[in-house]
Image (cartoon, rainbow, N blue to C red):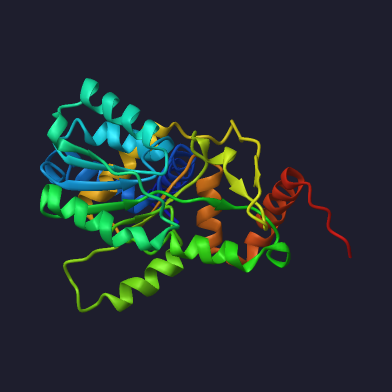
Length: 285
């Protein structure tokens, strides 16, 4: 074998090593990363859109409203806490490029399905259309399946039914819904799968009987909310169907789960032990 062969082999090895090392610095999947580099920018693609955000009173929803307020969109802010929504509105007006008429505060409980039609009509009456619905609102369930009241599952599913663009939802649920909407090409569904992000979500876990509990945060894995929202905006601007957003090693786990599932039982076991410890669950065999 000649010198050229070994040089090519060495270059290939170096590229592989560099690729693996660079992956360790990623905080999103490769599709989203490519869109961030080469796709449409949110400033152009989202201008003049009417964006309805549920769960807009804190966390990802609040930061999304704040960053969108700088892009010249019309905002609808929904959550159960009306006072917090007013605070978010003031923040958007003070630091964004919007006027009072561009923001509608619309308190809403997603679990109360009887209020959805009225809320939708209110938005249409105010702005005439809904371009994007960010279904960010909801609650998080943290208990063993066998210990969970069936009413908990009903509330969780009912809260997911308002989908145009869907975030923090189940990719399987949205995939099935996307199939049902085949005859409605004007409605596009997206699933955003964020990892651990700084928010109040850890204060609002419900157990199997609707009682609230708190899980400890994982500061080493936490992504800044502003960075998560920047990536969400890129996904919105480029109509990506499913994206993963997370710091390492959470992103690596997502790739292992997707492409090397037979190895995932090791990671799943470690994560399961953490959750069990946080919830005070003891397993008996």
